[in-house]
Image (tube, rainbow, N blue to C red; front, side, top):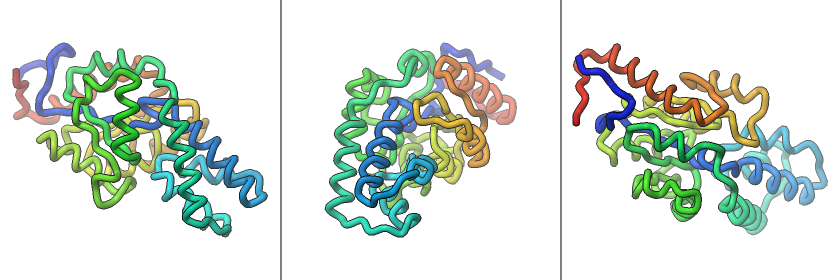
Length: 242
């Protein structure tokens, strides 16, 4: 059986990454804006504890969910204004430390699968210098019937890349995204190194099905290599294609 050296590109496996909270440190920005705007709107305090567990949802879905939880009204114009504010600020969020070097060290085809819209994700990967790694392999919630936690965006990515879902490894920072990737039949690495991560996030990601949880992008290449070797050990018919 052939080995799986870290320098060899494996065309029948793929790395799929979420965007917000994995590529860029944007979820903390989104949380701050949403909490501030809603607390001012409704005259409430303590909404951070309501909002934080919902990060990873589409903004409009998150806002409607918060309104339902606290039983407060939220009209469409206000929702859209808050969503636009989040987008305008999150699109300039800094890259996660070490993300480009980590992704460059992984010899797999790469895609991004996000609950955000395509224009936003494209602008993010262009700005932080990852466009050459992802190419046109950007898959977003506005392109599929249902957003995360439904598996649609991950299944669309696997289908377009002609890679079986079980041969896709996903980097996610939220329980919502982890549930989506797990439902698609993929392996999830949970990332808790972004600014919005809490002490309980590790437990939440593991409960959602994450294979392993890590907090430093420098560890990602070795985690992916470990998974590839596990795949080799458990799939006797696997062969590396040059």
